[in-house]
Image (cartoon, rainbow, N blue to C red; front, side, top):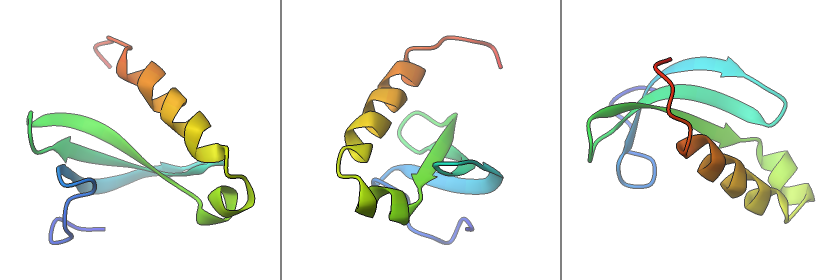
Length: 72
């Protein structure tokens, strides 16, 4: 993905790929509202299609990670 793509969710701009995992791909991005560096995780579509509860678990994981305050 590159900077010429529209922002995800209206405000998360993808900068570069960080890595792949079992649930999806993680990218480094920028929150255009706060100018903060963020991690953006895109779920594998086959996981979501096969398990409707996956989105709820993913949202809970994201909320828990948002509460982490660590310099790295």
